[in-house]
Length: 114
Image (cartoon, rainbow, N blue to C red; front, side, top):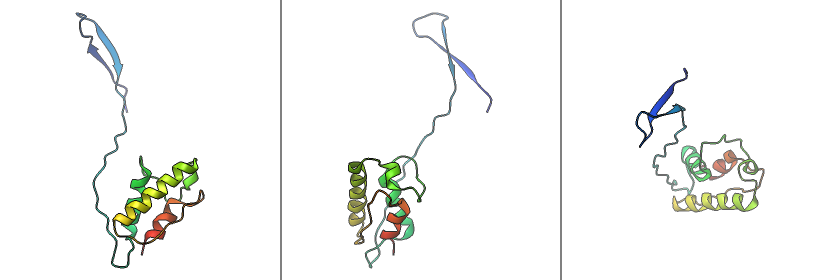
């Protein structure tokens, strides 16, 4: 990408200009999605993945990422797991998921899946 320098007028100073440089800022967009369990009380693989990724927050993470890499503090990991359980239950899922430091995001999604 070619560098682009811009100038802006400085308010209150006639003829004065402030230099600047254009940068690209990542933008994360959230889209509402409804997840719901099957009659067997479990989620589809797609819904389970959506649930886990939305509970992490921020950018999507690789399913092979261990909880200890994202949540080094026990309290943060436990809060994440509680969010997953609460959301899964609200969607009608009756499955439980592991929550050890070495548990991966994919293992949590798999535990909630039919």
